Length: 309
Image 1 (cartoon, one colour):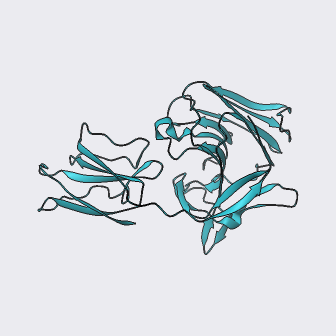
Image 2 (image 1 turned 135 degrees about the vertical axis):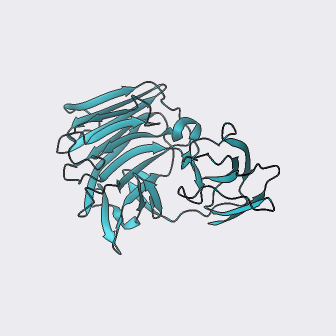
Image 3 (image 1 turned 60 degrees about the horizontal axis):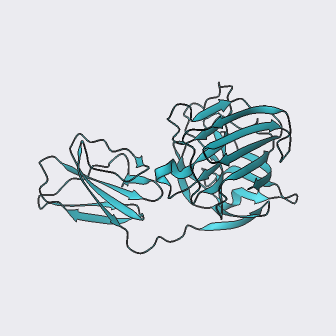
């Protein structure tokens, strides 16, 4: 973190400053619970901020309630009187990662923390590895009294094509554990970060029968999430991504050609992104749940990943 400061001319009584920093999405600074920054008597303001590639300073009315994140740059209008955007100086240091080879592709295993599912999930490089057969293991385990999760990112973008994942039985997962296999473009805010998801888990709801879903972003648009109940045992999940369409399918068994009995399938034809700088990500993480907190370590095995242009 660092300090960001500035000067305001012509502000009205009661107006405040709100700061956003762009690192992927635009994130309100310094924290969502205290985003309104007072303007001092000499018309200056300052605050701590997480580092980003760009920064936006908003002059806002007292009634403004800034969202925690934005996909695109903030703009003036309504309770936002003025917006000033500046680029950061220098470059951000690369996050520490561990290289991993899986199914003929190079991946980077993450070691930083990231907010997902309502929790700040710490990722540990020891929670992702391949065994003698080449299968990938992702694990959640406790270190220093904190749960640590697994997150790995492909090193190159693949674009349109067929993405296939063979996943061993996940019926043992607790309600708060989520396995996510998705694309994500940190620079693609104009296309909702090109995120398309195959996700396995119950999102903290132990009573639901639906334990898997396909989705495209934004998730809050009706029709952008397709939930279903997947059975126990090894399953093969496929995403076929092409112009204007994202076709998902899950079949029984281990078949990179998706030839087993169909469990569920769904086609999205609205809001499907075009290729950009998206990367494939694999995550095993925890969602927030006061009723069903995680009780024990979790592990999933992805036997195989294949991509066909």
